[in-house]
Image (cartoon, rainbow, N blue to C red; front, side):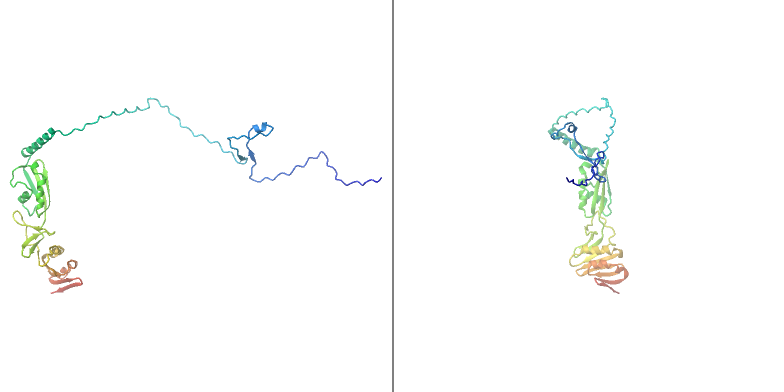
Length: 314
């Protein structure tokens, strides 16, 4: 009987050796182990229980994340005890005002007002009459002429202020000599009239109508009783023929006033100005005024002013 050769089997490990455990899984730095929040009932019951809906949210939190610190309660201010004496009393409600009744004007009041007006008129004549009239600002009109234009009595007899008033002084502005006027009363018995007059600027010899005085703005100033025109010989004379050019002649006279203008003559062709230092002619007013300085540059000469230059003659 043949015997089989023994097989080469590895020896069996001893029983006292520990069993090999699987190698540990490597940990990733910075990654925490998640922890699952669960309820305590899941540990006591052996069989898996059915999940019940819970109002508490479940979430995963890493162990490496720090827990947030508990919020500190804000300090409360100490409250002060309020006593009934500290509460101010509430104001009492305002009483309702009774509605006012509208009263109409009774006829008796109209009669009383009329009697009072008549009484004031009487008192103005008898108790507080105007005794003094002062006139100022007049140089060419006499005081009597100003009083006449103002509607005042010519004599010095007293008169009532309510009878006169400032409305009657409008006659002052009707005179061409007066530019403006002001009437005031100074209590108890004085009226002051302040006027501003126009001044004569030239003598205008109108063709076939005689000579009249004119102011700088071209207003004709009448002469006669109660008017003192002043020294008329010193005023320049304005003459001319053809279409009236008075306003232009007065403007040229004003522009040449420093050369002592004696006369200005206008024609359809231009203007001729005679001064104390010579004579100048110009066909255009604007050009004449622009080159008027040549009169002083060439004294005692005859000057012709043109848009393109100045001609000087002996």
